[in-house]
Image (cartoon, rainbow, N blue to C red):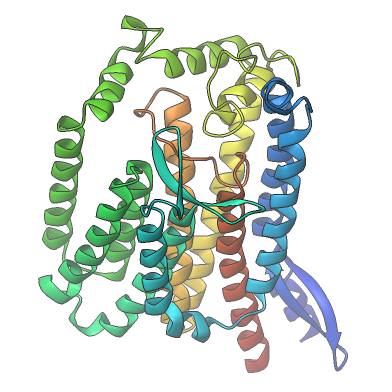
Length: 393
């Protein structure tokens, strides 16, 4: 029996002994990959923000110190969430989503919401700026996972199966577009639609909503000169390299300079006031310049491991009969994966520019804390599932 237990949990971290037995609590591959991304992100934020930080505050470590504080807060939240119960999150789903929608309304109210660079996405909480949209993404996953479990017997019907959830997403999307924050809308839509597909909704229902979503995105782009300019700049960035195509051109130059092994850590030229948002949205471009293709592929691999382990955990939960835990793990994995994929696609010139951070790595307090909470939810499912499996033994 001891040999069998050791073999089953060889890839998981062991926390403590209870009555002489070892209880595994976390997936080593998942946790290790996240910690590597956090560490690499800390290094790259410092490298990418040295010039910007010195110009803004006279202290070259300004952003990396704040990033480190955000990371510690995030790790604390991860640890706290990890030791909560799955059933509590299932019960709290609707209330969390309502709370998130209230926050999205609050950012649009003058005096409460802070307007930065033409966008009203933040609430000034004194010590840090809170971006509610980062947490709404998690609240939406928590809610939809519960909805799919409650309505699993009628998911094949169009109205209860997909239209009601789509209406909830539409309400959140309209509030986000007022900020404006189309990138978050895209991430939420991709995540929720993927969750619906995995839950077993009818394929033609799924494709109908996907078609409506794509049509909506096209319409929103055509009626907004700002978004249309980004798409035009994406199609041919070098046609206007100093205006609509500026960010993408500078990012592509960074990738080109990096080649295979990069120019060396700290040796990027593009981060010296050439590449906008070098330590936030375009951190990957700076990494590509300094660490080359090897560095970029390493980051892609780490994200692939996180998503794969999360989906594997969801499969384990579903086979064990814990349907809500399975839907939650699927949603969180897809949320992390889709945001990382979009950010990397923007940096590489494969997608139009969106204001999305690279999870675990880019500078941004709300993004960091939200991503750590998301991983905490996966570790919570892992811990509870392992505990139940252990008890059955």
